[in-house]
Each structure stands twice: as structure tokens, then as C-alpha cells.
Amino acid sequence: MALDNAEARAYVNKLCILLDLPLLEAGTSGHIGQAMLIKRSESRCYSCFPKPKPKTYPVCTIRTFPEKPIHCIIWSKYLFGLFFGPHDDTNPLVDILDAIMVDEKNHKKMAVDVFNELFYTQIAKQKDIEPEKFRKLSPYKIEHSIIDKKLDF
Image (cartoon, rainbow, N blue to C red):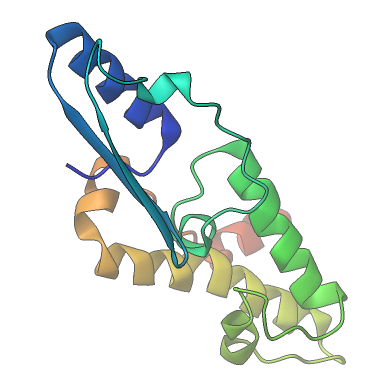
């Protein structure tokens, strides 16, 4: 079983301690990895080790499945930097610029292109890549034409 967040790991830890089952805890972050065996009455449990709050978040989480408010804030920060900051090839959203036409003279068309890329094309790509994940959540693609009619844009 693979767990990718501290809450799930703490839950499994509690179950293993309660049921007196050994737990092999392992994880990676970039090129750094760690593993430890946890056994009731023989070692410290997973929750006994202090967990610092992360200062960075995996790009895959930010990019494809921002499930917590902090993930959405980080995503917004990257998006703001993409459109209003200096060019930065390390921005994980930089490919979005390739998908839209930057048009300084036609702001409406550019806004529509950005909207369609973020809320239609990107979601469609993710649904194609990971259909199982999205089947449970059923996010939907938003077509700009619907909003265009409601706002008289």
C-alpha cells in the first residue's frame, strides 16, 4: 500500500500499533529516501517523530490534484508569476504559455484562451491520464461560452 500524505500514514500507524502489527514506513522526497520498521513496544511509532510543516509541495500535487487550500494558493502563486512576473523556466506551469496565444492587443481573446486552457483543456488532459482518480471526484470542464453568455463578455 502506498501512502502519500502524513494523515494517512498516521492513521495506518495507529491501526498497526493497535493490532500489534509491524509497519515498514518508507518514503522519498526528490532523491532523498528513508525507511524504518515500526513495532509496538520495540520502537517509536510514526507519530512519535516530529513532522515539520512542508515548505515546498510536490509539483504533481499542485499541478494535477490540489486537494488542500494551501495547494490552491501555491498553484495561484505559480499562475500569477507566469502571467505577471519575469519569465521563469522553473515555473511548473510554464507549458501553459505554449498552449495560449499571448496577444497584447486583444485582451479578451487572451483571457478566453487562458480560461479555456486552465478550466477545460488541463482538466480534460488529467481525466484522460488518470480516469480512476477523476471518476470518484467527477470534476467537470467549464466551457467559456457558457460564462460568456451569462456575463455578456
